Amino acid sequence: MVKYEDGLHETITPKREKKYYKPIFMASVGYGNSYAGTGIRLGYRTGGTVAFGVHVGVGYSSDIDKTSGAFGLKLFPYKSLYLNAQYGMIGSYKYFEDGKAVKDELEGISVMAGIDKIWGDKIGYGFNIAVGPAFSVSNSKVLTAFDIGFILRF
Image (cartoon, rainbow, N blue to C red; front, top):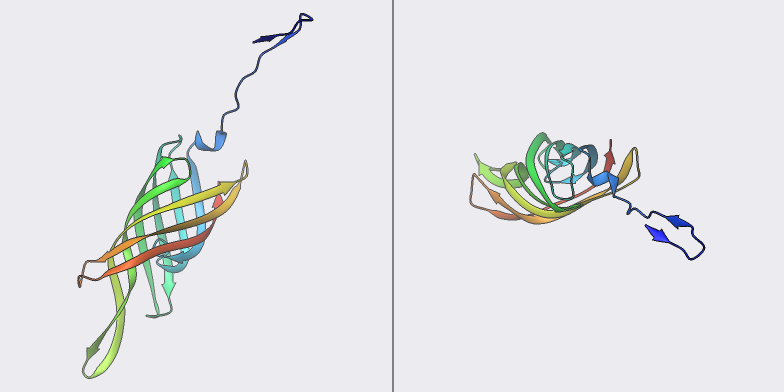
């Protein structure tokens, strides 16, 4: 409480950043490992400045002409910043079968660091960007994993 010389007084209370204190649902469109190519991703995040999240993505890869999926877990150590571990499509690879080249899906585990930056009060909007390594489970390849997308928060 602040008291002024003329006898008036007022109470000052700090404003809390409300969007970090309640659980949120997110829908995203974008490109990358979390989107399984070009696709959509649905996610849930617990409330708090430090939080946990889960997401699932479904997308299309024109490189292999196939629809695929990905799912993962997120740790938000501070507000919008996150660490992500996920399983799903990480790329494609070429091999030869009966003398002709064939491309197929490369599945694996991605470990990324990124940000889900969102603005707005009731329905939020923002962007997602992340990068990290991806490890193939089928042929020992290590690739670069990344995500970029547009987010709607509910």
